Structure formats: C-alpha cells, structure tokens
Amino acid sequence: MSAARNVIISGSGEFDYDFIVVGSGFGGSVAAYRLAEKGYKVAVMEMGCRWTPENLPRTTWSLHRWFWRPKLALRGFFSIQYFRHITVLHGCAVGGGSVTYATTLLRPPDKVWQTGSWTGLADWKSEMPQHYRQASRMLGVVENNILGPADRLLKAAAEVTGVGHTFYRTSVAIFQAPEGEAGGNSFPDPYFGGEGPPRTTCIGCGGCMMGCRYGAKNTLDLNYLWLAEKRGTQIFPQSKVVEVKPLNGAADGADGYEVRTVKSTNWFFKAPRRFTCRGVVFAASSLGTMELLFRLKESGSLPRISDQLGKHVRTNSESLLAVRTPGSTEDLSKGVAIGSGVYVEEHTHIEAVRYPSGSDTMSLLTTILTGGVPGPARVALWLRNLAAALLRHPWKTLRVLQPFGWARENVVLLCMQALEGNLEMCWRRRWFWPFQKFLSSRGEKIPTYIPQANQFAETLARLTGGTAMSMIPEILFNIPGTAHCLGGCVIADSPEHGVVDYRHRLFGYKNVYVCDGSVVAANLGVNPSLTITALAERAMSFIPARSATDWSDFAESETM
Ligand SMILES: Cc1cc2nc3c(=O)[nH]c(=O)nc-3n(C[C@H](O)[C@H](O)[C@H](O)COP(=O)(O)OP(=O)(O)OC[C@H]3O[C@@H](n4cnc5c(N)ncnc54)[C@H](O)[C@@H]3O)c2cc1C
Ligand code: SF4
Image (cartoon, rainbow, N blue to C red; front, side):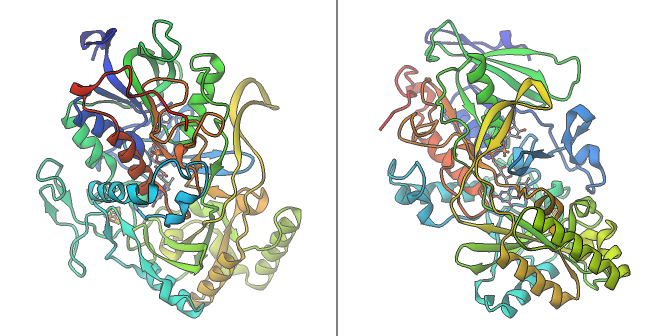
C-alpha cells in the first residue's frame, strides 16, 4: 500500500495513520485491537514474519524456520540474545512471543503491586482484576485438562518432597476438548461469537513452543490481531522500525511523528519506508523497546526520554534444569508445553516443560547437574562430576549427553523465584567492536543456582531412574537464561524514577505509549504474558474514542 494514498486529515496536518504500533506481541496486539475498535486508523510494524500452520517447522532441527537470526538467513520466530548477565529467550513474529510461548497464563500475587516504582500510582489491587478477566477472556484461558506423563512425574516428585498439595494444573491459552475426550476436532469460532477463525481442539502433542500446527493454541494472530485486522488495522510483517521522531519541529510530538522502517530480513536491499502518524505505541518487548528507545534518545530523535531508560530490568530469577530418562517407557513429550507446576516453597515455583518429539536441539545446552557456588569452583565441580559420571557409567552418561531422542525422554524443569533483584541495561560500545553501540547489561549478577530446584531435580531423577541435568551457560559462564525479561521502561511517578506514567504515556512526549513487558515494575514470580496483556488493556481503556479525541490534551504524561 502506498503511504501517500491513504492519508488522514487530522487536526494540524495529514497523516498516514492515527497510531503506529511497534511490535505485535501481547502489548502491541492489545493496543492495535483496542485502538482500531475505538475508531482509530492503525498500522502495526512487526520485525518478524507471519506464521501459519502450513509454514511452521515440525521440529527444532528445522533451524531456518525456528530460529531468528536474519543475517544468517534464519527467519524463524524464536531468538536468543546473550548479555554479560543474562541470556534472553524471546519471540519474534506476527503475534510476538505468542507464537513460541508455552501458553501458561498465570496471575501474580497481589503483593507485586506494592513493590517497585508503580506502588501507589493507582489502586492496582482493585483496578487490575477486571483487566485480567478481560485479557483471560480474549486469550481463551482455561485450566489445562491434558496432563501428560511429565506432569504426573512432577506430581510424584512433589509428593516425595512433601509439597504434593501445591501441585496445580496450569492455566493455558489453548482450545481444549472436555477432559477425557480426544482432540483434533474442528469447530467454528468458539470465542468471539463467530467473528474469529475456526479452531481445532488440542491433541496434546507438546509442540506449543514450536508454534501450533493444529490451530489449537490461542496465539495473538487468532484473537487480538485477527479482530484488529477485521477493523482495518494494517500489519506490516518483516518491517523493523529504525526511526521515530516528532514532525514539524514540535519537540514534544504535538504535531505527530515520522516513523521509518526497513525490511528486517534483507541484508542489502533494505526497502526503507516512511510513514506519518499522530501517535506511537512502542510494544517491541522489554529488550526491543529498550534497544529502540536508546537508539532514538542517543541519535537525538527523542532526546527527552528519561535517563531511567534501561534501569530496573528484571527476570523471574529463573533457572532451567532437566531430567533425562533414556529408555523411558512413556513418551515424555506428550501433553501441553507447560502442563502443571508445584511450589517447593513460598517463593520458589517449578513447572514441568516439554518440547515435541523430535525437537532435540535444546539438549545441546544441557549437561550433568552441578550445584555449588557460581564461578570457577562451580566449573571445577562440574568437570569433576562429568569425569566421575563418565568413569562410573560411561554408556549411560554418553547416552544422556547425545541429542537424539531428548524430547521424548526429557522433562525440563522451569524454576522461578519471586525475589527482588534487578540489573541495568545501557547503550555502549563493545571492546571487540568499537564502531557501534549495543544494548549491554551491567549490575549485580542474578543467581544461577537455586538449591531447592537442584534438589527437586535430583528427586525426580531418582524416581525415574534418569539423570538430572543443568544448563551449560549457567555453569560455565554463571549466566542465567530467562524467557521473562521485564522492565527497563518502568511505570513511575516521574521521569526521575521511570520512563512512563501510570497510563503508560512516555514522559516528555505527547501521544506516545509503551505497552509491553518493559513497563513492568516488579518481579511477578510467574509467567508474565497475562499481566502484560492486562496492563495493555488498562492503558488502552484510558484512550477516548476517535470521535471524542482532542489530540492536544489526552495524551500528555503526568508526574505525580
Ligand atoms: C520459549 C518461550 C516460552 C515462553 N512461555 C511463556 C509462557 O508460557 N507464559 C508466559 O506468560 N510467557 C512466556 N514466555 C514469555 C513471553 O513470550 C513474553 O513475556 C511476551 O511475549 C512478552 O510480550 P511483549 O508484548 O512484551 O513482547 P513480545 O511478545 O516479545 O513482542 C514484541 C514484538 O516486537 C517485535 N519487535 C522488536 N523490535 C522491533 C522493531 N524495532 N520494529 C518492529 N518490531 C519489533 C518483535 O519481533 C516481537 O514480535 C515465553 C517465552 C519464550 C521465548
Ligand atoms: S499441545 Fe500440540 S495441539 Fe495442543 S496447543 Fe500445543 S502444539 Fe497445539
């Protein structure tokens, strides 16, 4: 579509769109749909590709369709970024992280609203439940009714450890048949009164993190984005936003914005495009929004962005462990990606995770379980454990270290802790590549060793006759992996303490919002996507219908 053909005459000028949303994950999809519903003309710029059941990969061995590293011609939907303090796993697609996520949607405890810079800025405890309900309805959240062998093992290990009563079925965004009934049956749209796409019930193949090839997983392209497109929203896949700056010299953006994109999957012919709009919603995920805003602040395009950008970055203090049982009589890949969880103590929570049969590449990151104090001593202990295992049980040890059959024989244990602790992201040159600035981490290290999680993995291994495993980056480099990177543009009372106000409005600019994981101001202790969705629902609820909009006064951030 030509940008020039479709202009809006609005207030002080002509615009291609009322709002441009950067990123189509949980925050971006909500923003796109709610704005379109209110009558705005909306475009969504998404760096990743569009996925359908037909083009999704079958297993993780199909690297070019699974992994996102476009410079290496890998154009999938799953990405890993390495920093000194954390390794971040994230999604990159039309639908953002929802294409690769495990669909676990949990509400955090109320105490998170009394922690961090958002405390006291709204009556969160009474406001949020309605937005969680709305988000859950839109995402089709149900209690998981497909327990696979890995879930039963988790329960058995919890019982042996004395915490069997904490076992719970996860809440998942999956279209499931009634318990006990076979899946695989197709129905007309079950969620939106016929306005949504037809769906098929889940067959429990364990493949949710590879995208669902059966139409059972409620990814954002089947709900929020679907409905947004029906209301005229235009989605531009493979379009990376590289520039956002105020138009006509109004430094606060009162005259609208210019947004520039390039084709994210091209090496050379970047196909640059320029669009204009009245307002912008940054929703590129915690990492993506931080990176873009740092670039725009540094280049002088949006210099008023708070110096708090990059501060208060959090994870769920995760640790990934696994138990591999070669020769397991049961196929441990069956079920949904995260079917159940247990609390091994008040702040420590473990979920049973699986990949679908044949998706064995993640095994290349696992090794023999090793505890101990992080650092050289832990590496030495790991080498000793590995040597001892190879000497005592050479065949068994080699068997658990080789990749083939991993997904069928393996339970991944995702351990999360609701403890405070955060780091900082900054924009600086790297010693080995001084020509360019990059997002880099600094601050205190996040613990990579959670003793309760290791003990739990050992208990599970004893039950199955398997071997407990750790993640190699956690041991070798003392760097925890996280799929839940949050914060960096947190909600606060003023630019001295955060980057956006309590309605997600960017301090210093008019009609600019941030709606993604970067605004989260506390460690949620649970998988964050439901909270990101609910927060975006809340932020969008403050925006008036287009017919009632006076662009000059509704979107200026407030300090408190
Ligand atoms: C393997 C895996 C499993 C997970 N499982 C769960 C789970 O079970 N439950 C849960 O709650 N969470 C889970 N998560 C985490 C979840 O995916 C994220 O918390 C969530 O997607 C974050 O939402 P968001 O709106 O902040 O951004 P995202 O959903 O990450 O969306 C941001 C989008 O912006 C795009 N983007 C970035 N920069 C630009 C740019 N410059 N221009 C254009 N587009 C851009 C990205 O491509 C991306 O698609 C999982 C994550 C992974 C990796
Ligand atoms: S378990 Fe399989 S069918 Fe069910 S939602 Fe996940 S990928 Fe789809």
